[in-house]
Image (cartoon, rainbow over all chains, first blue to last red; front, side):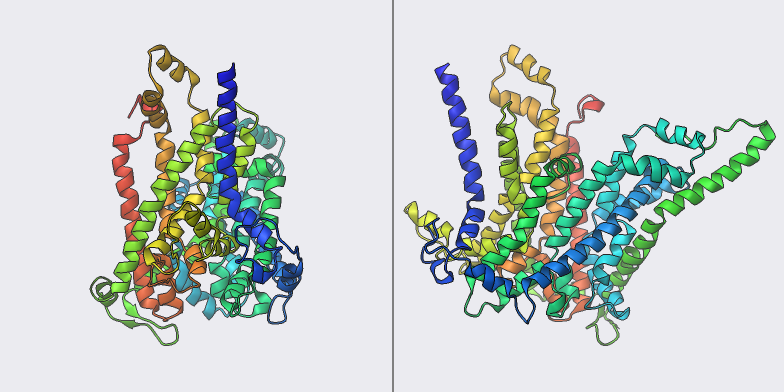
Length: 279
Length: 318
C-alpha cells in the first residue's frame, strides 16, 4: 500500500516536473514580457517581474513603419480566412470524388496526390515565384492563397479516410430518393464529415498563422505584413534591442494558437493521432 | 470498397446496356468534376513548376534576364567548387540524423510513461504536446534565440550545475545543437501518435508474456517495439523529410545569415539565400533537385530496410 502510494507520487513528480521543465522557456517568455526591457537579461533567473509593467505591450503594439500590430493581425486574419474557405471547399469536393465516385484514372490521380505530399516546396518555389511575378501578383496575398483553392494533399487524404468510414448505404438511400451525385456530397457527406473539416480548419489556421516563408517571399510593403513577418522585422530592426516589446508581441501571436487548442483540443489530438499531421 | 451505385438499375437487357454506357460516362464526368480542382492545381502549381525548375537547374538565371543554358555547370559547381554547399549539406545531415532519432526516442519514452490509467494523463499529454503546437512559430524561434543567449536561462542553468557557460552564438557546433534541441523539444506530436499506437496493442499479449515470466525489457523488445514498428516507420519517414526542409528556426535564430560561421546554414536556408539574396535562381533550382533526390534516396533506404524491422500483424509477422 505504502509502496504503491510512493510510486504514484514519484510518477507524478517525474512526469509533472518534466512537463513544467519543458514549458519553462514559454513561462519565462511570458514573465519577461512584463519586465522592464533593460531588466530582462539582468534578472534572467527571476520569475517575478519587478516592477511589473505593461509598457512592452503598448510599445510593441505601436508596430513599425506607421502600422500598428493590429494591422498585422488584421492582415493575417484575412490571409487565414481566404485559406480556410479555399481548403474547406476544395478539399471536401476532391476528397468526395476520391472516396465515393468511380471513374477512369481514379487510382492514378490518387497516387499522384499522395506522391505530391512528399514533394519539397523548394522544388516548385522558384518557378512559382517566376510565374506569380509574371502575373503581377507580387506584394499581394494572391500567390499565397490562390493555390489553396485547388486542394491540399494532406487534408484531402485526411478527409478521404474519414469519408470511407461513412456507410455507403446512406448514399444509396439518398440516390434512391432521387438525390443527385452533388446532392449526396452536399446533403449526406458534408454534414457527416464536420469533425474532419474542423481538423482541416484548425491546422489550416495554424499553418497559415505560422507561415513565414510565403510572406517573406511575396509581401514587401509593411502594411501588408502578417504577424510572423512583423516579428521577423522586430528581430532584424533591433538595433538597440527592445527585447520587451518583441517578447510581448511574441506572446500576442501565441495567444490565438493556445486559445484554439484549448477550445478544440479533441480535434487537434485526433487529427494528429489518426493522420500523423505534424502540429 | 467501390461498389458501383449507379449501375444497379433494373431494365430489360439491351436497354440496360446502353444505360450502362451512359452511366459510365456520367460517372466519369462527375468524378472529374469533383477532383477537377486537384488536377488543375496540380498541373499549374506543381507539374509546370517542376518542369521549369528542372530547366532552370541547367541554366544561369538571375530572374531579370533570360535564362542562359549552361548544361551541368550548376551541379558540377555544387560538388566541386562550393565548399559552403558541402558544409551546408553536412550540417543538414547532422541536424536530421541527430535530431530525428533523439526526438523519436523521447516521444516513445514519454508515450510509454503516459500509457497508464490515470486521470492526470490527459493533462500531461497536453503539457507535452504544447511545444509541438507552437514550435513552428516565429515567436518560439525568437524565444529560443533568447534563452540560449550568453546570459540566457540555459547558460544560467549550466553554470548553476557548476559547468562552464556555452557561447551558443559563438561556436558553430553549439549553434547547430541549439537548433537540434529546438527540434527535440517538439517531440509532442510524435508522442501523441505513439500513444495512440500503444493503446491499440492488445493487453492479452502482455498478460501472456507475464505468465511466461517475461520482464519489462523483454516485453518492450518482443512486444512493444514490433507492434509499434509500422508507426515508427511512418514517423521516421515524415520526420526525416520535414527535418531536411527545416527553414524557419534557422532563418530566425541566425537572423537570416546562417551564422555563426555558417553553423546554422541548413540546406533550405542556403537555397533560399542563393535564390533570393544572390539571385542565382539556376543554382538554387539545381540545389532543390539534389534535395529532392536526397530525400527520395533516404526514403527508399528507410523503406527497403523496413522489411527487416517492421512487423505487420496481418502478414503473420514480417
